[in-house]
Image (cartoon, rainbow, N blue to C red; front, side, top):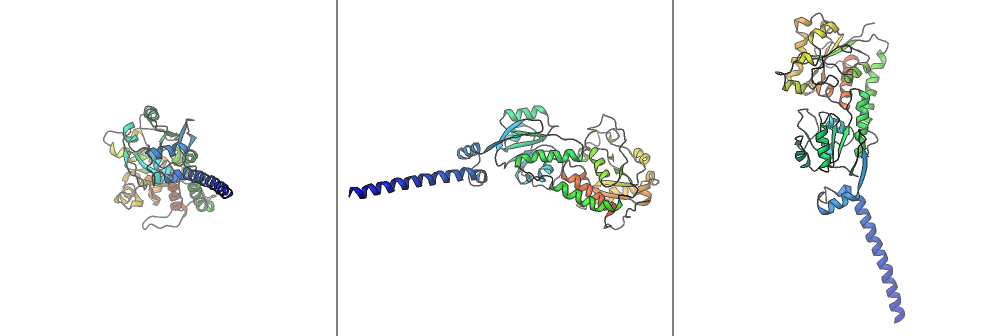
Length: 360
């Protein structure tokens, strides 16, 4: 009898060890899976949710070398700035944008809410992290951080290479190691169209809309150079009294303030366009949306009596390009470059628009 009890006791102890080990394994799996469960099964900001979040954190460094702690699996992001949403779209973070600021910038991304640039407004969305350009007021950034909200600041500069760098930097939030994929695709498509024409004479190209003026920026310059063109506005001098001479002008902002802002102070004028005398004019407009603005913006240039001696107008080399792509400091700027290359070297698909022919 004693022997049986001894064997039974030993079995109980062994079983207890296995049960205890099983419980530990389950707890480990539960903690490992916690990032996926948070917000879906477990309330993120309940007691258990906060505990699991604290057990699944990592440190990341932004463009200003500020180190911050974020959940291992970032699920809730508030974006600040006109193009931040589109940058996020290239790195797989788009589904997790819970809100963005009140910019009039239009995006295809579904946004759950709009925030005011205040700590209370942003905090109400309980973000894991706020992503913002370095043009964001430092006082807002410091106030958000003081309130316990991580703010990831990225550098916003005016070139294609800097767009890629900013995207790769933000990609660290989601551990995205393939954030260049969208850029690579666009560049490959452009290269296929441009290569057969590399020995052709380069056309002088200008981006112009009669409502805004001549566009001048490093991103526009990069677009034109990569489609085998010469930036006609490259030497254009613009006074410093405009909104921001170093970045792309915000068409939507100008439209909202056109009664109080002198366009001549921030962009090139019609007189500048005539002096440049471009071979090709790209017109930033909303043509993809098939809005009346598309035809109106083209016709405003083609029928302008002051522009009839401009080479692009005489030959009909005046083409629309999606202004929301041109205006976006993101992979969408590369899509605008693709549109330019298709107009210059791809098959003509728009009725009534003369196809560009390069001259020897």
